[in-house]
Length: 165
Image (cartoon, rainbow, N blue to C red; front, side, top):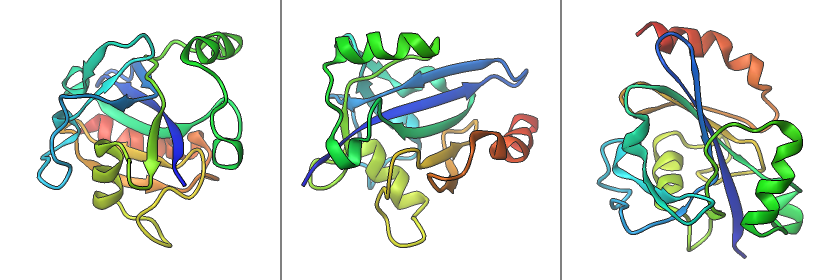
């Protein structure tokens, strides 16, 4: 079974300005995840169908989180990209939005294969549930993984550490 998954990502400048982005689909510009050197070797299709290189976020601390507007693992992301864009307006979302992807299974987006390989989970290298989080340093390296139940505010000490580097 394929789990379509969204990607939610916040990137911070060294002055802690938030530069967020989210939801990715596979695009032609992706490296083989086994030979990738950083997240900058990947690209994704944004919610409007445009290819975006993750090189855009070079030099920023990032948190990559799989999200869904509804319970994706239990019922899949039900909406179209247009419906998703409309849904998130109620939350004043200002981050970049990307198309749906797979985070587990045979058609996993290469970025997610890379992330899971670099920062494996407690019970295995798979995404257990919505809101699994990966902390990315300014060099595009996954440096820490957080469980779905870890609240975003709990990441602050780690973020401050990587902002300072």
